[in-house]
Length: 283
Image 1 (cartoon, helix red, strand yellow):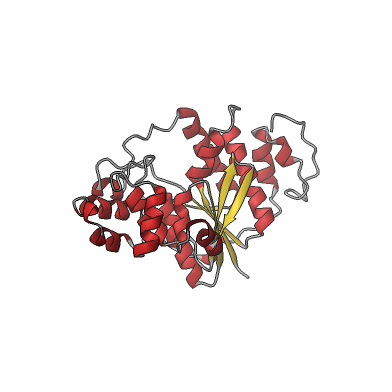
Image 2 (cartoon, rainbow, N blue to C red):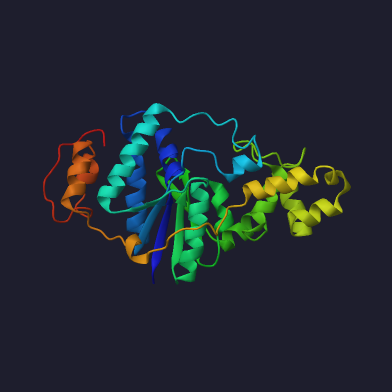
């Protein structure tokens, strides 16, 4: 079976950055999780999506979108740039698109992959991507730092929330999201939002049925549009360009070694043709 591993680049390196204070720790944490997932899942194809540091169509819809987000720390920006350089050396295909978020790229690629007969696994620390789960797409969420993960499929979402994945957008439309500054409905928390969507199926029906939500209809529906991941943006899908296999070659070994990633360099499963012990460092 063709398997595609889609990685939420910004989400994963952010999680790694705040999990360590070591120099290059975010880059190493990302790579460690990334390579572990490749070994566990054995994908035939791999892609990493990144945000572009510019406003998106969601900012045009709502001026307050993510208004409380702090700028990226300089050290994280440096490591993000370095990570992209390393991924290029590794031959990993990367995607980013002005006006859209990595979530939209991942949603679009997962949709295209499904049409091409792929089974897709999305690696992320962002629960928003659970809305993308289908019969052919699962989400692997980082659980603790970047060392543990858990798989979410349609069965798990039904068990945890009692809804299908696409209804998670309607739940978020009602409850809002403080981290993204999505307003939602005043006074509606997660439990109430889940209850309402289970009862009324979608947010439009819930708003129409409950009188106290009528006056907030516009902002609730706008919240739904902000929370909805786009799965149909223009995006090339060259299957051959996404192909990825282990072991890694010597240029990758040299790049890891120059950054002090000795624990990765000394793994025979990653570099079967490079038998050069590297002195241990922090990594």
